[in-house]
Length: 240
Length: 240
Image 1: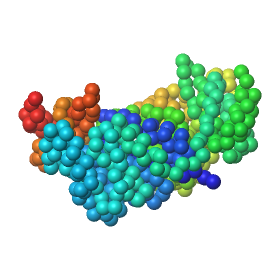
Image 2: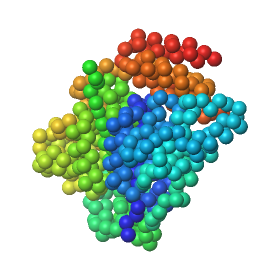
Image 3: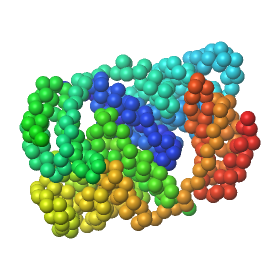
Image 4: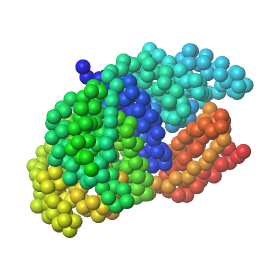
Protein backbone atom coordinates (compact mmCIF):
# COMPACT_ATOMS: atom_id res chain seq x y z
CA UNK A 1 0.00 0.00 0.00
CA UNK A 2 1.26 3.45 -0.83
CA UNK A 3 2.33 5.69 2.03
CA UNK A 4 0.19 8.64 3.12
CA UNK A 5 1.14 11.89 1.36
CA UNK A 6 1.83 15.35 2.71
CA UNK A 7 2.46 18.84 1.41
CA UNK A 8 3.91 21.90 3.12
CA UNK A 9 3.00 25.54 2.62
CA UNK A 10 5.53 28.13 3.78
CA UNK A 11 4.14 31.64 4.12
CA UNK A 12 6.68 34.41 4.13
CA UNK A 13 7.95 37.34 2.13
CA UNK A 14 11.22 37.12 4.01
CA UNK A 15 12.14 33.85 2.31
CA UNK A 16 11.08 34.96 -1.18
CA UNK A 17 13.12 38.16 -0.86
CA UNK A 18 16.23 36.18 0.05
CA UNK A 19 16.47 37.78 3.48
CA UNK A 20 16.01 34.51 5.37
CA UNK A 21 16.85 30.95 4.45
CA UNK A 22 14.02 28.61 5.38
CA UNK A 23 14.84 25.98 7.99
CA UNK A 24 11.40 24.51 8.67
CA UNK A 25 11.05 22.64 5.39
CA UNK A 26 14.24 20.69 5.94
CA UNK A 27 13.18 19.81 9.50
CA UNK A 28 9.70 18.68 8.46
CA UNK A 29 11.01 16.66 5.52
CA UNK A 30 13.26 14.64 7.82
CA UNK A 31 10.53 14.07 10.43
CA UNK A 32 7.93 12.92 7.88
CA UNK A 33 10.37 10.55 6.19
CA UNK A 34 11.00 8.84 9.54
CA UNK A 35 7.32 8.01 10.03
CA UNK A 36 6.66 6.92 6.47
CA UNK A 37 4.70 9.94 5.26
CA UNK A 38 5.79 11.04 1.80
CA UNK A 39 6.33 14.80 1.50
CA UNK A 40 5.32 15.31 -2.14
CA UNK A 41 5.26 19.06 -2.59
CA UNK A 42 6.30 22.29 -0.90
CA UNK A 43 5.02 25.70 -1.89
CA UNK A 44 6.36 29.02 -0.67
CA UNK A 45 4.07 32.01 -1.16
CA UNK A 46 4.19 35.62 -0.02
CA UNK A 47 2.05 37.27 2.65
CA UNK A 48 -0.75 37.70 0.13
CA UNK A 49 -4.35 36.72 0.85
CA UNK A 50 -5.26 35.32 -2.58
CA UNK A 51 -1.97 33.41 -2.87
CA UNK A 52 -2.35 31.78 0.56
CA UNK A 53 -6.00 30.82 0.06
CA UNK A 54 -5.35 29.41 -3.42
CA UNK A 55 -2.37 27.34 -2.28
CA UNK A 56 -4.15 25.95 0.81
CA UNK A 57 -7.15 24.85 -1.24
CA UNK A 58 -5.01 23.17 -3.90
CA UNK A 59 -2.75 21.35 -1.43
CA UNK A 60 -5.57 20.34 0.90
CA UNK A 61 -7.40 18.74 -2.04
CA UNK A 62 -4.30 17.09 -3.45
CA UNK A 63 -2.63 15.47 -0.43
CA UNK A 64 -3.60 13.58 2.72
CA UNK A 65 -2.06 16.13 5.09
CA UNK A 66 -0.95 19.76 4.76
CA UNK A 67 1.33 21.58 7.18
CA UNK A 68 1.72 25.35 7.02
CA UNK A 69 4.47 27.47 8.54
CA UNK A 70 4.41 31.19 9.30
CA UNK A 71 2.11 34.17 9.65
CA UNK A 72 0.23 33.43 12.89
CA UNK A 73 1.76 36.08 15.16
CA UNK A 74 0.24 39.31 16.53
CA UNK A 75 1.42 41.80 13.89
CA UNK A 76 -0.51 43.28 10.93
CA UNK A 77 1.38 41.10 8.42
CA UNK A 78 0.24 37.88 10.12
CA UNK A 79 -2.76 36.94 7.98
CA UNK A 80 -2.48 33.16 7.80
CA UNK A 81 -5.23 32.23 10.29
CA UNK A 82 -7.78 34.42 8.53
CA UNK A 83 -6.79 33.05 5.11
CA UNK A 84 -7.09 29.43 6.27
CA UNK A 85 -10.54 30.19 7.70
CA UNK A 86 -11.54 31.71 4.34
CA UNK A 87 -10.21 28.66 2.47
CA UNK A 88 -12.47 26.45 4.60
CA UNK A 89 -15.42 28.88 4.61
CA UNK A 90 -15.17 28.92 8.39
CA UNK A 91 -16.00 31.81 10.71
CA UNK A 92 -13.00 33.16 12.62
CA UNK A 93 -12.73 35.31 15.73
CA UNK A 94 -10.93 35.39 19.07
CA UNK A 95 -11.90 32.05 20.56
CA UNK A 96 -12.45 31.47 24.29
CA UNK A 97 -10.18 28.45 24.69
CA UNK A 98 -7.23 30.13 22.98
CA UNK A 99 -7.87 33.40 24.81
CA UNK A 100 -7.87 31.59 28.17
CA UNK A 101 -4.49 29.99 27.43
CA UNK A 102 -2.93 33.29 26.48
CA UNK A 103 -4.61 35.28 29.27
CA UNK A 104 -3.19 32.89 31.89
CA UNK A 105 0.25 33.09 30.25
CA UNK A 106 0.36 36.90 30.24
CA UNK A 107 -1.12 37.09 33.76
CA UNK A 108 1.73 34.90 35.01
CA UNK A 109 4.21 37.23 33.33
CA UNK A 110 2.44 40.37 34.55
CA UNK A 111 2.19 41.54 30.94
CA UNK A 112 -0.85 43.25 29.44
CA UNK A 113 -2.96 40.97 27.20
CA UNK A 114 -3.53 43.75 24.68
CA UNK A 115 -5.46 43.82 21.40
CA UNK A 116 -2.45 42.77 19.32
CA UNK A 117 -1.79 39.74 21.53
CA UNK A 118 -5.48 38.82 21.36
CA UNK A 119 -5.05 38.45 17.58
CA UNK A 120 -3.10 35.28 18.37
CA UNK A 121 -6.31 33.80 19.83
CA UNK A 122 -8.11 34.12 16.48
CA UNK A 123 -9.01 30.51 15.65
CA UNK A 124 -11.52 29.30 13.04
CA UNK A 125 -14.70 27.63 14.29
CA UNK A 126 -14.33 23.86 14.35
CA UNK A 127 -10.52 23.91 14.48
CA UNK A 128 -8.58 21.96 17.09
CA UNK A 129 -5.76 23.78 18.92
CA UNK A 130 -2.13 22.70 18.49
CA UNK A 131 -0.15 23.02 21.70
CA UNK A 132 2.77 25.45 21.79
CA UNK A 133 4.96 24.72 24.82
CA UNK A 134 7.52 27.34 23.72
CA UNK A 135 5.51 30.55 23.55
CA UNK A 136 1.92 29.39 24.30
CA UNK A 137 0.12 31.01 21.31
CA UNK A 138 -1.45 27.91 19.74
CA UNK A 139 -1.52 26.63 16.19
CA UNK A 140 -4.61 24.85 14.95
CA UNK A 141 -5.84 21.98 12.80
CA UNK A 142 -8.81 22.39 10.47
CA UNK A 143 -9.74 19.65 8.03
CA UNK A 144 -6.46 18.09 6.94
CA UNK A 145 -4.48 21.33 7.41
CA UNK A 146 -2.18 21.91 10.39
CA UNK A 147 -1.34 25.58 10.88
CA UNK A 148 1.96 26.22 12.66
CA UNK A 149 4.23 29.12 13.57
CA UNK A 150 7.25 30.12 11.48
CA UNK A 151 9.76 30.63 14.31
CA UNK A 152 11.81 27.41 14.05
CA UNK A 153 11.75 26.48 17.76
CA UNK A 154 7.97 26.87 17.87
CA UNK A 155 7.46 25.13 14.52
CA UNK A 156 9.47 22.15 15.70
CA UNK A 157 7.51 21.90 18.95
CA UNK A 158 4.23 21.97 17.02
CA UNK A 159 5.44 19.30 14.59
CA UNK A 160 6.35 17.15 17.60
CA UNK A 161 2.85 17.46 19.01
CA UNK A 162 1.01 16.82 15.71
CA UNK A 163 3.19 14.04 14.27
CA UNK A 164 1.99 11.27 16.65
CA UNK A 165 -1.61 12.00 15.61
CA UNK A 166 -0.93 11.36 11.90
CA UNK A 167 -1.25 7.97 10.27
CA UNK A 168 2.22 6.93 9.16
CA UNK A 169 3.31 4.39 6.62
CA UNK A 170 6.36 2.29 5.96
CA UNK A 171 9.35 4.39 7.00
CA UNK A 172 11.59 5.01 4.02
CA UNK A 173 14.95 3.32 4.40
CA UNK A 174 17.86 4.68 2.44
CA UNK A 175 21.45 3.84 1.75
CA UNK A 176 23.96 6.03 -0.04
CA UNK A 177 27.07 5.16 -2.02
CA UNK A 178 29.46 7.86 -3.09
CA UNK A 179 31.01 7.17 -6.48
CA UNK A 180 33.95 9.28 -7.61
CA UNK A 181 33.13 9.17 -11.30
CA UNK A 182 31.13 11.52 -13.47
CA UNK A 183 27.43 10.78 -13.85
CA UNK A 184 27.90 10.31 -17.60
CA UNK A 185 30.07 7.29 -16.93
CA UNK A 186 27.76 5.53 -14.48
CA UNK A 187 24.37 6.48 -15.95
CA UNK A 188 24.03 3.43 -18.25
CA UNK A 189 24.55 0.65 -15.66
CA UNK A 190 22.61 2.70 -13.09
CA UNK A 191 19.61 2.86 -15.39
CA UNK A 192 19.68 -0.95 -15.77
CA UNK A 193 19.86 -1.35 -12.00
CA UNK A 194 16.85 0.95 -11.58
CA UNK A 195 14.92 -1.12 -14.14
CA UNK A 196 15.71 -4.32 -12.18
CA UNK A 197 14.44 -2.78 -8.91
CA UNK A 198 11.23 -0.98 -9.92
CA UNK A 199 10.02 -1.08 -6.30
CA UNK A 200 12.93 1.13 -5.19
CA UNK A 201 13.76 4.75 -5.88
CA UNK A 202 17.33 5.10 -7.10
CA UNK A 203 18.54 8.68 -7.32
CA UNK A 204 21.82 10.11 -8.51
CA UNK A 205 22.95 13.40 -6.95
CA UNK A 206 26.01 14.77 -8.70
CA UNK A 207 28.65 16.94 -7.08
CA UNK A 208 31.85 18.63 -8.04
CA UNK A 209 34.67 18.71 -5.53
CA UNK A 210 38.21 19.99 -6.07
CA UNK A 211 37.60 20.02 -9.79
CA UNK A 212 36.56 16.37 -10.12
CA UNK A 213 33.09 14.97 -10.57
CA UNK A 214 31.23 12.40 -8.52
CA UNK A 215 27.74 11.42 -7.51
CA UNK A 216 25.98 10.17 -4.42
CA UNK A 217 23.70 7.31 -5.37
CA UNK A 218 20.81 7.04 -2.96
CA UNK A 219 18.69 3.88 -2.90
CA UNK A 220 15.38 4.27 -1.07
CA UNK A 221 12.62 1.81 -0.27
CA UNK A 222 10.55 0.44 2.56
CA UNK A 223 11.86 -3.15 2.31
CA UNK A 224 15.30 -3.32 3.91
CA UNK A 225 16.25 -6.60 2.22
CA UNK A 226 15.54 -5.14 -1.22
CA UNK A 227 17.55 -1.99 -0.45
CA UNK A 228 20.42 -4.22 0.72
CA UNK A 229 20.22 -6.32 -2.45
CA UNK A 230 20.31 -3.27 -4.72
CA UNK A 231 23.17 -1.73 -2.76
CA UNK A 232 25.18 -4.95 -3.08
CA UNK A 233 24.67 -4.91 -6.86
CA UNK A 234 25.54 -1.21 -7.01
CA UNK A 235 28.77 -1.67 -5.05
CA UNK A 236 29.82 -4.55 -7.32
CA UNK A 237 29.05 -2.51 -10.46
CA UNK A 238 31.25 0.37 -9.43
CA UNK A 239 33.97 -1.32 -7.38
CA UNK A 240 36.81 1.16 -7.76
CA UNK B 1 4.31 50.30 -12.31
CA UNK B 2 4.48 46.93 -10.63
CA UNK B 3 7.72 44.98 -10.92
CA UNK B 4 7.95 41.91 -13.16
CA UNK B 5 7.13 38.66 -11.33
CA UNK B 6 8.95 35.36 -11.17
CA UNK B 7 8.41 31.87 -9.80
CA UNK B 8 10.85 29.06 -9.18
CA UNK B 9 10.31 25.33 -9.56
CA UNK B 10 12.74 23.05 -7.74
CA UNK B 11 12.72 19.44 -8.93
CA UNK B 12 14.17 16.91 -6.55
CA UNK B 13 13.26 14.00 -4.32
CA UNK B 14 16.42 14.62 -2.33
CA UNK B 15 15.06 17.86 -0.91
CA UNK B 16 11.58 16.48 -0.13
CA UNK B 17 13.09 13.49 1.68
CA UNK B 18 15.17 15.79 3.90
CA UNK B 19 18.45 14.41 2.56
CA UNK B 20 19.60 17.72 1.10
CA UNK B 21 18.88 21.28 2.08
CA UNK B 22 18.15 23.41 -0.98
CA UNK B 23 20.60 26.23 -1.63
CA UNK B 24 19.48 27.42 -5.07
CA UNK B 25 16.26 29.08 -3.91
CA UNK B 26 18.05 31.34 -1.47
CA UNK B 27 20.61 32.31 -4.12
CA UNK B 28 17.98 33.05 -6.77
CA UNK B 29 15.81 35.03 -4.32
CA UNK B 30 18.70 37.36 -3.54
CA UNK B 31 19.67 37.83 -7.20
CA UNK B 32 16.13 38.60 -8.35
CA UNK B 33 15.57 41.08 -5.53
CA UNK B 34 18.65 43.02 -6.65
CA UNK B 35 17.30 43.53 -10.16
CA UNK B 36 13.75 44.37 -9.14
CA UNK B 37 12.05 41.13 -10.14
CA UNK B 38 9.60 39.95 -7.48
CA UNK B 39 9.92 36.25 -6.66
CA UNK B 40 6.30 35.46 -5.82
CA UNK B 41 6.20 31.70 -5.45
CA UNK B 42 8.46 28.67 -5.17
CA UNK B 43 7.31 25.10 -5.64
CA UNK B 44 9.29 21.98 -4.87
CA UNK B 45 8.07 18.78 -6.49
CA UNK B 46 9.44 15.26 -6.72
CA UNK B 47 10.96 13.57 -9.78
CA UNK B 48 7.47 12.78 -11.04
CA UNK B 49 6.35 13.47 -14.59
CA UNK B 50 2.78 14.58 -13.85
CA UNK B 51 3.89 16.76 -10.93
CA UNK B 52 6.58 18.53 -12.97
CA UNK B 53 4.35 19.14 -16.00
CA UNK B 54 1.47 20.41 -13.86
CA UNK B 55 3.68 22.79 -11.89
CA UNK B 56 5.45 24.18 -14.98
CA UNK B 57 2.15 24.89 -16.72
CA UNK B 58 0.66 26.61 -13.67
CA UNK B 59 3.71 28.75 -12.93
CA UNK B 60 4.36 29.63 -16.58
CA UNK B 61 0.79 30.90 -16.89
CA UNK B 62 0.85 32.74 -13.55
CA UNK B 63 4.12 34.67 -13.63
CA UNK B 64 6.28 36.64 -16.07
CA UNK B 65 9.30 34.37 -15.68
CA UNK B 66 9.85 30.84 -14.35
CA UNK B 67 13.20 29.36 -13.37
CA UNK B 68 13.60 25.64 -12.75
CA UNK B 69 16.41 23.86 -10.94
CA UNK B 70 17.36 20.20 -11.14
CA UNK B 71 16.87 17.05 -13.18
CA UNK B 72 18.79 17.79 -16.40
CA UNK B 73 21.74 15.41 -15.95
CA UNK B 74 22.50 12.15 -17.76
CA UNK B 75 20.95 9.63 -15.34
CA UNK B 76 17.60 7.83 -15.56
CA UNK B 77 16.06 10.02 -12.85
CA UNK B 78 16.75 13.21 -14.85
CA UNK B 79 13.38 13.75 -16.53
CA UNK B 80 13.03 17.54 -16.40
CA UNK B 81 13.86 18.35 -20.05
CA UNK B 82 11.31 15.86 -21.37
CA UNK B 83 8.64 17.13 -18.94
CA UNK B 84 9.21 20.76 -19.95
CA UNK B 85 8.92 19.78 -23.62
CA UNK B 86 5.63 17.99 -22.84
CA UNK B 87 4.34 21.04 -20.96
CA UNK B 88 4.97 23.17 -24.08
CA UNK B 89 3.81 20.48 -26.55
CA UNK B 90 7.27 20.68 -28.10
CA UNK B 91 9.18 17.85 -29.76
CA UNK B 92 12.38 16.88 -27.95
CA UNK B 93 15.43 14.93 -29.04
CA UNK B 94 19.22 15.20 -29.02
CA UNK B 95 19.81 18.53 -30.74
CA UNK B 96 22.79 19.24 -33.01
CA UNK B 97 23.92 22.48 -31.35
CA UNK B 98 23.93 20.98 -27.85
CA UNK B 99 25.54 17.77 -29.11
CA UNK B 100 28.33 19.75 -30.78
CA UNK B 101 29.10 21.61 -27.54
CA UNK B 102 29.29 18.39 -25.54
CA UNK B 103 31.14 16.41 -28.23
CA UNK B 104 33.89 19.07 -28.31
CA UNK B 105 34.05 19.08 -24.51
CA UNK B 106 34.44 15.30 -24.20
CA UNK B 107 36.88 15.19 -27.13
CA UNK B 108 39.08 17.70 -25.32
CA UNK B 109 38.99 15.49 -22.24
CA UNK B 110 39.51 12.28 -24.18
CA UNK B 111 36.32 10.89 -22.67
CA UNK B 112 33.73 8.85 -24.56
CA UNK B 113 30.59 10.81 -25.51
CA UNK B 114 28.35 7.85 -24.67
CA UNK B 115 24.57 7.43 -24.84
CA UNK B 116 24.05 8.62 -21.27
CA UNK B 117 26.02 11.82 -21.88
CA UNK B 118 24.07 12.39 -25.10
CA UNK B 119 20.91 12.59 -22.97
CA UNK B 120 22.23 15.97 -21.79
CA UNK B 121 21.89 17.23 -25.37
CA UNK B 122 18.13 16.56 -25.39
CA UNK B 123 16.67 20.02 -25.99
CA UNK B 124 13.10 20.87 -27.04
CA UNK B 125 12.57 22.32 -30.52
CA UNK B 126 12.46 26.10 -30.41
CA UNK B 127 14.36 26.38 -27.12
CA UNK B 128 17.38 28.65 -26.74
CA UNK B 129 20.45 27.19 -25.01
CA UNK B 130 21.68 28.57 -21.68
CA UNK B 131 25.44 28.61 -21.41
CA UNK B 132 27.10 26.45 -18.75
CA UNK B 133 30.71 27.53 -18.28
CA UNK B 134 31.16 25.11 -15.37
CA UNK B 135 30.37 21.72 -16.91
CA UNK B 136 29.27 22.59 -20.49
CA UNK B 137 25.94 20.65 -20.57
CA UNK B 138 23.55 23.51 -21.38
CA UNK B 139 20.28 24.58 -19.83
CA UNK B 140 17.59 26.02 -22.08
CA UNK B 141 14.88 28.63 -22.31
CA UNK B 142 11.48 27.84 -23.81
CA UNK B 143 8.64 30.34 -23.64
CA UNK B 144 9.07 32.12 -20.31
CA UNK B 145 10.69 29.11 -18.61
CA UNK B 146 14.44 28.90 -17.96
CA UNK B 147 15.59 25.35 -17.26
CA UNK B 148 18.75 25.10 -15.16
CA UNK B 149 20.85 22.47 -13.42
CA UNK B 150 20.52 21.62 -9.73
CA UNK B 151 24.22 21.50 -8.82
CA UNK B 152 24.66 24.87 -7.08
CA UNK B 153 27.82 26.00 -8.90
CA UNK B 154 26.20 25.28 -12.26
CA UNK B 155 22.85 26.78 -11.23
CA UNK B 156 24.56 29.98 -10.17
CA UNK B 157 26.49 30.24 -13.44
CA UNK B 158 23.28 29.76 -15.43
CA UNK B 159 21.45 32.39 -13.36
CA UNK B 160 24.34 34.76 -14.08
CA UNK B 161 23.98 34.25 -17.84
CA UNK B 162 20.17 34.54 -17.93
CA UNK B 163 19.66 37.41 -15.48
CA UNK B 164 20.95 40.18 -17.80
CA UNK B 165 18.42 39.08 -20.44
CA UNK B 166 15.42 39.57 -18.14
CA UNK B 167 13.53 42.83 -17.83
CA UNK B 168 14.07 44.11 -14.31
CA UNK B 169 12.09 46.59 -12.30
CA UNK B 170 12.73 48.90 -9.42
CA UNK B 171 15.22 47.16 -7.16
CA UNK B 172 13.67 46.57 -3.78
CA UNK B 173 15.42 48.59 -1.07
CA UNK B 174 15.18 47.37 2.46
CA UNK B 175 16.17 48.52 5.92
CA UNK B 176 15.96 46.47 9.08
CA UNK B 177 15.59 47.53 12.70
CA UNK B 178 16.00 45.02 15.47
CA UNK B 179 13.68 45.66 18.39
CA UNK B 180 14.25 43.79 21.63
CA UNK B 181 10.61 43.63 22.65
CA UNK B 182 7.99 40.98 22.05
CA UNK B 183 5.85 41.35 18.92
CA UNK B 184 2.74 41.65 21.08
CA UNK B 185 4.05 44.91 22.50
CA UNK B 186 4.98 46.56 19.22
CA UNK B 187 2.21 45.23 16.98
CA UNK B 188 -0.26 48.10 17.61
CA UNK B 189 2.03 51.05 16.68
CA UNK B 190 3.56 48.98 13.87
CA UNK B 191 0.16 48.43 12.32
CA UNK B 192 -0.50 52.20 12.35
CA UNK B 193 2.87 52.81 10.71
CA UNK B 194 2.04 50.27 7.99
CA UNK B 195 -1.29 52.02 7.38
CA UNK B 196 0.52 55.37 6.98
CA UNK B 197 2.93 53.90 4.41
CA UNK B 198 0.70 51.78 2.16
CA UNK B 199 3.31 51.94 -0.63
CA UNK B 200 5.85 50.08 1.52
CA UNK B 201 5.95 46.51 2.80
CA UNK B 202 6.57 46.42 6.53
CA UNK B 203 7.27 42.96 7.89
CA UNK B 204 7.88 41.78 11.44
CA UNK B 205 10.07 38.69 11.87
CA UNK B 206 10.07 37.53 15.46
CA UNK B 207 12.92 35.70 17.16
CA UNK B 208 13.69 34.26 20.53
CA UNK B 209 17.21 34.59 21.86
CA UNK B 210 18.48 33.60 25.30
CA UNK B 211 14.92 33.31 26.49
CA UNK B 212 13.83 36.81 25.52
CA UNK B 213 11.70 37.87 22.58
CA UNK B 214 12.44 40.37 19.86
CA UNK B 215 11.63 41.08 16.25
CA UNK B 216 13.42 42.32 13.16
CA UNK B 217 11.27 44.91 11.45
CA UNK B 218 12.02 45.02 7.74
CA UNK B 219 10.80 47.96 5.66
CA UNK B 220 10.88 47.38 1.91
CA UNK B 221 10.08 49.59 -1.02
CA UNK B 222 11.49 50.93 -4.25
CA UNK B 223 11.55 54.61 -3.18
CA UNK B 224 14.56 55.18 -0.93
CA UNK B 225 13.22 58.44 0.53
CA UNK B 226 9.98 56.74 1.61
CA UNK B 227 11.89 53.84 3.18
CA UNK B 228 14.04 56.38 5.04
CA UNK B 229 10.99 58.27 6.25
CA UNK B 230 9.30 55.13 7.55
CA UNK B 231 12.50 53.97 9.22
CA UNK B 232 12.87 57.35 10.99
CA UNK B 233 9.31 57.07 12.31
CA UNK B 234 9.92 53.46 13.35
CA UNK B 235 13.10 54.32 15.24
CA UNK B 236 11.35 57.15 17.08
CA UNK B 237 8.40 54.90 18.00
CA UNK B 238 10.57 52.30 19.61
CA UNK B 239 13.49 54.33 20.93
CA UNK B 240 14.75 52.14 23.75
